[in-house]
Image (cartoon, rainbow, N blue to C red; front, side, top):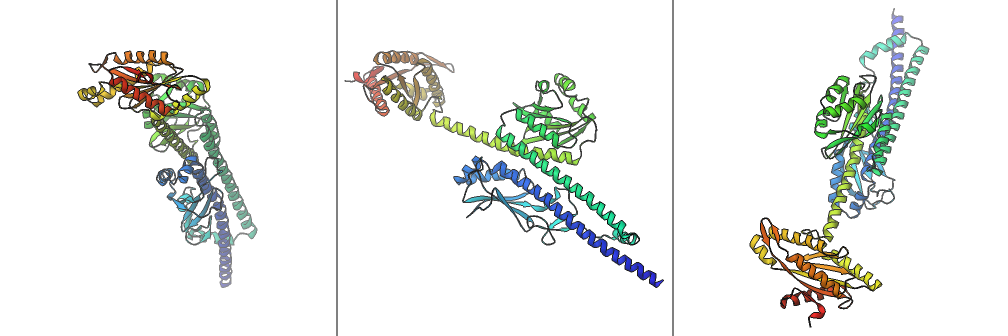
Length: 556
C-alpha cells in the first residue's frame, strides 16, 4: 500500500512539474507572439498620428516659425482621437537619429518621439520634436487580453516593457489534470500538447495577417482621402476597401454632409445613381445613431426607414434594399462635435452577422477618417483665413474697392505697360464735397452707407479697363489707361454728373458733389507717386477756385 502511494505521489509530482514547465513554455510563446501583435498595433497608431499630423506642411511651418501656441492647439486635438494618449508636448532636441519616429518605454508607458516633416516627408525640423506618452496597459486591453498586464518586472514583452500574468500559472482546478495525465501514456500527452500549440499558432497567424491587412487598408484610405478629398470617387474606393476588410459586410453606403443634409456619395450592393438623388436630414440621422455606433437588425431598419419622408422612403424601398437588410452597422464620423459623414455596413443573410470584431473595425475606420477630416477641416479654415487676410490687405473693408496698396501695385504695372506701348495714363483724384455735413447730420453709420453707394456708382460709371480705389475718408482715386486730355475730360464730366444725382437712402435725400484733380502720364510725371501727388494738388486747386475739376496744365 505504501509503495503504491509512493509511486502515485511520485508520478503525480513528476506529472505536475511537467505540466508546470509546459505551461510556462506555452505562456512564454504566447507572450512572444502577442508581443508581435501588440507591436503592430502600437506602430499602427503611431504611424497614423505621424501621417495625420507630423507629415504636414502646416505643422512643419508652425514649428519652423516657432508658433508654439498653434502647435499646442493641434496637439490638443490629437488627444481627443486617441484614448491611449496620456501626454504630448513639444521638446527641443540636439539630434534625431531615426526615420519618422522612435518608440521606447518609460515605466508603464510608451514614449514616442516624432519628427516633424513637411507633406512630402523630405524635410524635417532639426531643433525640435514632439514627445508623446501612450498608456501601455490601455493598448493591451484594446486587444481584448485579460490574462496579462503591464508591470515593472516580469516577462520581456515589447519596446522594453515587461508583463506578468493576472492569474496563477496553474490554478487549483488544474490539480486534477496532473492526476489524470499521470495515468495517461506520455505519448498521448505529447499529442495533445502538440495539437493545442498548433491551433494556437494558426490562430495567431490568422490574427497577425488580419491585423496587417487592416492596417494596410487604413493607411491606403488615409492617403487616398488626403490626396483627393474633393473627389467623390475616392469615397467609392474607400468603401470598397472597407467592405472587403470588415467581417461579414456584404454591402454598404457612405453619406457625406453638404448644406446640413446627408447625401449618398458611395455604395456597394446598391444603385448609387438612384440613391444619390435623395438626401437625409442631419438632425434626424443623429437621433437614429446614438453613441459611437449603431447596430440594428431587420425590424430596427424597417422601423427607422418607415419614419422618413414618403418620397425618400419610396426610393429606399425600391433601390435601398431595406426589405433585404438583415443586419446593419452605422458608424458616424464627427469633426468638432458636428456630424460630417456616416458609413453603413450591411449584411443580407444573417441577423447576427456582425460581432465585436466587425463593430471594432467599423469604429477603427471611423476614428482614422475623423482624424483625416479634422486635418482637412483645419486646412480649409487656414486657407479661408489666408484668403480673407489677403483680401483685406488689398481692399477697402467699407466699400470693397481696392485700397491704397492695391492701387499702388496695379498702377506701377499699368505705367510699365504704358511705357512699353507708348500710351497715356490718367490719374484722377476725387474728393467728395459736402460729405462732412452728412456725417454730422445723420451719423457715421449713415455716412458709411453713402460711401458704399458712391463706390458702387464709381465702378459702374468708369470704363471696364479703369481701376477705382478708395484712399480713405471721402477720397477716391481712378487710374484710366490709354486716356488722353480729351478722354479724361469726358470721363470726369460723367463722374461729376453721376455723383451729383440725388441719393435716396432710408427715406432721406442726399445731395453731393465732387472735386476732381487730374494728372496725365507721361506729360505731368513718370512715377505713380508723382502723378497721385499732382492730381491731389490739382483737386485742391479746383476746390479753391470753385471749380469741379482741374488738370495740372490748368493750374497756372
